[in-house]
Image (cartoon, rainbow, N blue to C red; front, side, top):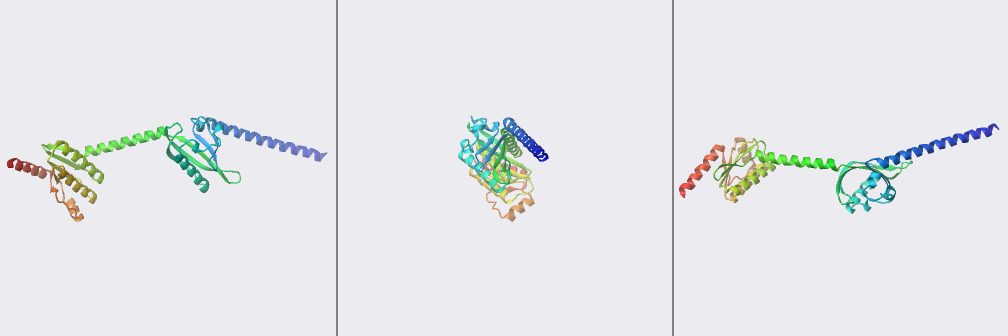
Length: 289
C-alpha cells in the first residue's frame, strides 16, 4: 500500500514537471511568435541549404507572401542571382567556420525593383548537441541613414573642391596675362586642378602669358614638379607662355636634385620679376609691330 502511494506521488510529480515544461515551452513559443510578428527588423532562420525555416512578419512584407508561405523559399526566389549567390556564400562560410557576419552593409535590389541599403548580421544556428543546422539572420533597413551619409559625403567633396578652387584662383592681371598664386601645400591632385583651371582660362580669355607663382609653398616633390612641367608644356600648346615665379633656394635645389628638365619653362624668383618680364615682352611685341 505504501509502495502504491509512493508510485502515485512520483507519477503526479512527473506529470507536474511535464506540465510546467510544456507551459514554459508554450510561453517561449508565444514570446518568439510575438517577436516575429511585431519586430520591425527582419529576422529569419535558415537550414543548411539556406531555405527559410521561419521569418518575421517584417521579412515577409513586400513579397506578397505570409510567414507560412515564406517557409521553404530561398533568396533566389526574391533577389537577383548575383545577390542571392553572395548571400548563400556568406551563409555557407558562416556554417563552415562558425564565425558570424556582423553589420555587413550592402545595397540590395528589392523584389519591387527599388534599391535599398541593409545592415545584416548572421550567426550559425546550432541544435542541442552543438551541431550546426543553419543560420540565424537579422537585417535592418538603413537606407535613410546611408542616404544621409552619402549626401553628407557629396557635400564634403563639393566643399573640398570649392575650397581648392578658391585657394588657387586664376587672376586676370592684365590684358592677355593670367596669374595663379599658389598658397599652402601642393600635392599632385591640387597641381592637376590648377593645370586644368589655368588651361581653361587661357583658352577662354585668349591669354598669351600665364604666371604660376609658388612663393607661398615651401616644398615641391617629384610628382608635383613633373606636373608643373607638364602644365608649362600644355600652356605652350594652347598658344601662351608659362612663367614660374617664386622659386626659392630650397625648391630650386629640389628641382636640380631631381634632375627635372625645365626646358621651355621660364623661372623667376619673384612675382614682380615675372610681371616685369611679361610687360617688357608685350612692349617688344608692340614695337616690333
